[in-house]
Image 1 (cartoon, rainbow, N blue to C red):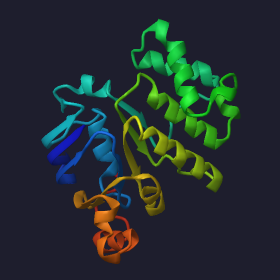
Image 2 (image 1 turned 180 degrees about the horizontal axis):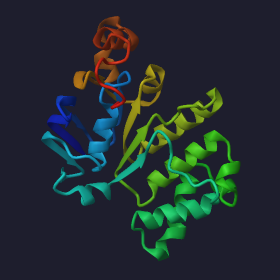
Image 3 (image 1 turned 90 degrees about the vertical axis):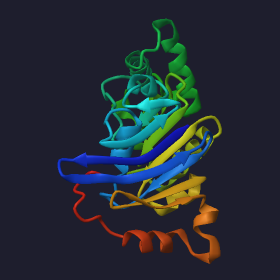
Image 4 (image 1 turned 135 degrees about the vertical axis):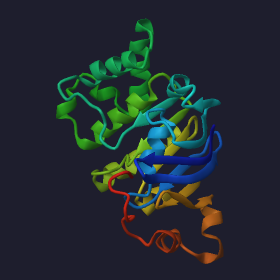
Length: 245
C-alpha cells in the first residue's frame, strides 16, 4: 500500500524529513507518533501528493510520487487537522460539493454522500447547517468527505483534537471501523490515541524514524509506549523544526 525509501524533504537548507524508510501494508491502522516538529505533517503532505519529496522514493497504492501524483490522490482520502468545512452549507450540500471536487460523476454524487453519511453516523443531520453542528459532528463530516470516492487509503491528522471525552470515544470507534475496509494513517501526538486504535506505530523524532513496528513489538520486555516515546524523542518539541510537524 505505502512504500517509503530514504525519503528526504528540505525546506531551504533545513531538512524536515531525513532519510526516512517504512512500509504500511494493506489493512493496517498505522499511527504516526511524534512531538510537534517531528515531521508528521510533511510526511502526510507527501503521501497525499501535495508536496514533492526532495529525495528518496515514495509509492502510494502502486503509484510513484511525484510522477503519478494525480493517480495517487485518487486513492487517498484526507482529513486535515482543521477540516475544510463550509459552515453555511448543509451536511448533504457539502458532501455533494466535496464529491464534485473529487471528480465523482454527477449521477453518483448523491449516492456517495449518503453512503459516506451512513458510515459516519450523519444520516440524521444531513439537512442541518454545518455551523449548527457540535464539534464532534463537524469532525464526522470531515471524515465523511475523506471517504468520498471509496479511497483505499485514509489519512487522518489529529482527528480527535478539541473533542470532549465522549466525542473522542465515538471518533476512535469510527476509526477502528474504517480500518476493517481501508488502510488508515493516523497522525497524533497523543499516546493513548495511538494505543487505542493503531495496529502499527511509527515514532518520529527530528525528522527521522526513531522506531517502528507493532505495539507488541515496541513494548516488548514490559516497557510502556510512553517510556519508549520519551526515551526516543525527549518528550518535547523538536528543536529547529518550526511548525513543520
